Length: 310
Image (tube, rainbow, N blue to C red; front, side):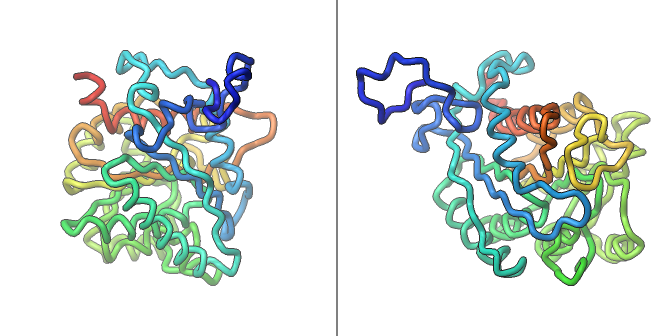
């Protein structure tokens, strides 16, 4: 794990793991070689209860440096085989949510163009960062995209607390461009239900429908088009698994059922990009950080599962 810019005489010293996703060395994290790219966006402005999502991307990357690279499910060290490049964090303007989201859309588009066919995973930050990324990807895919949203909340408010660029409005901002299939929902407002019922592109799989059998997976997949953007708000998980989030809701998803679903999504649809948002790290409580880091790793592995299994 030696940085390439060190003098040769220092190369054998016991340096720490690099501060990159998975702690990969220079070779496995080189942009030209990488199959996946991680984009940290530590933006927080409109959170409405608990705070701290600005620290989420750093905590995810820090925890990822200490998870095992070997994936028992795929029988390989996917990160080392594929290569994952970690970009510097984007520091968005503080001139208000509207300006920040406009800036993010421009920046994300440039990053996505530079990534070409690499799998781009954005780490937030609050959920408001997802809509500029989704819209930028819609601009790049003329045939249209579906959005798969794993979340406790529908995020369909036209605006919240005076801004249409709130974390609570993230999916409302994209409904005119892409159908949204929301899975794990268990906290909505009456206003959001009106938006959902009036918009044919909105599909909701309620959290309590997920516990009887796996038929909900078929319903969600049938509602998705061939190309998918995946947005994963970590409050989708039951707070017994991920308590470190701003607005936890009881009754959420579990680990293995979620992985079964995600593996099917990546096998049966083309997932063009993804984001993982709303981790608000709790000092001294690292279980949430590690779960979310491993989730991000799984998304990358599933994206290339056919290559890894070949």
